[in-house]
Length: 176
Image (cartoon, rainbow, N blue to C red):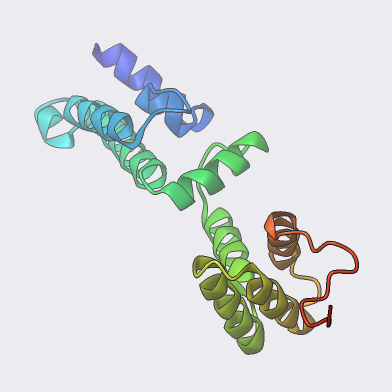
């Protein structure tokens, strides 16, 4: 890359998302992200431009920092997911606000109250054990403590859809 191209890239950094900066597709695998990062890191390592003009060193340093930032986001599945959602809303960089939103969302997924968390955890354990009836009942208990938790509602709907349907009038305790 020529010095003029490096300076131009530095000027347009604020208009590039991490995918464009690393020159990868949005569906790139983790291995592809890592490969692209290492290629860009080698191309823009500040030590390689030590003897150049100060403005070029500054441009390279800026690019290098943004490449590192992009890699830190795209290599982490949770951050990448949050970034992709923010990107759809026009946000090109991963910010503290995006990360805080991600943490808040993650907390809500597992519950925000002590009892909500406890019953949700019990529900997950029952589901892993294959006991969908218990998973449903304990999730309903969790929902009594967190009535507005959207994740709990979605999980309940999923569990109920997967649970075997009881036929009407079938009572396992009925005398025949």
